[in-house]
Amino acid sequence: MKKIFIFLFLSLTLNLDGFGQMRRYMSQFNQFQNYFNPAMTGYEGSNLKGFVRNQWAGFDGSPQLFYMSTELDFSEMKGMKDPSLVGKNTTGVTFLNESYGAFVDTEIQAAYAARVRLSRGTNLRLGASINYMHSRLDGNNLTTEQANDPTVAQYLNSFGNMSTIDFNVGLALTHENYYIGYSLQNANRGALNFGEVFVDRKPSVSIFQSGFRHTVSPSVSIASHFMYRSQIDLPNHFEANVKAILLDRIWVGAGHRVNYANNFTFGFVHQQIKFGYTHELPSQKGYLLPYATHEFILTFAFWRKYGKSNENSLVIW
Image 1 (cartoon, helix red, strand yellow):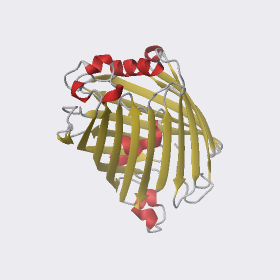
Image 2 (cartoon, rainbow, N blue to C red; image 1 turned 90 degrees about the vertical axis):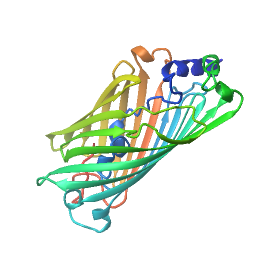
Image 3 (cartoon, rainbow, N blue to C red; image 1 turned 30 degrees about the vertical axis):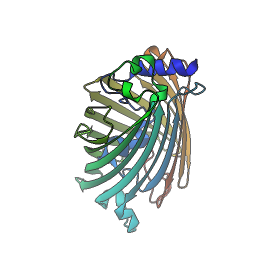
Image 4 (cartoon, one colour; image 1 turned 180 degrees about the vertical axis):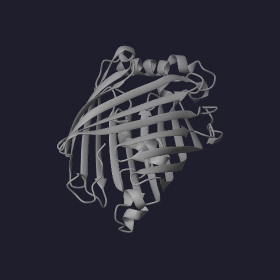
């Protein structure tokens, strides 16, 4: 019964003109700069990152997301001093797998970014990425409403597989105390696809992001982040979070996704390791499923250590 209910709910939240087009959420979106904006690849240096999001935990068939990425700053690899300022090129690869309802998406994204130094602490970054997505439709899990749709009815009690290649572009202005960026995802609108085409076109997505960090005292800093997304087939989306960073080692914070969810987060860093946990609760439009969402993130910095006390420190966002 729970599975039936969740599939009904997902069918209402999906774009009915293009199945499988559900907006992807990450409460601590600021931890995934390179995914949302290729220009931000390598912003926090070279690292390996893993992430798990278990949405509506305890609910059978609930959405689950697994994410892994690696970013490489070429100037760090060469051992250059102060690479975040003098370096010019970075690259990154992202792997993502998400299941929701009758769909399973597997996504691989390869990004490249270049930066131009504007002043002692400011860089202009430009980036682009190529994105491959494979979507699998399990016709055994279609809802009654979806089964009556002529586009996907042919997959009832069978499987469909579709692959898409697309492009993302972005630019950003970055500083150790702030960043402002814009990116365009699905720039080609999914025109290059093959397999069973059960999604005609993918809408382009405009994303605006910004973040600001303020030092309150030698042991306390405040970081705030904002993201606005716009696409033609879904309502405009805004979310923000703020956190206190203590001794550049521990953070605690909260966030809000307008009309949908609140979240609370904490984490810590030690040497080259950064770990974070986020607990998300639905609000207003998300009230139909009063189940918590859990997010876990683990980051390993290859060459630099976190914390201001280290000569080659990273700003912790």
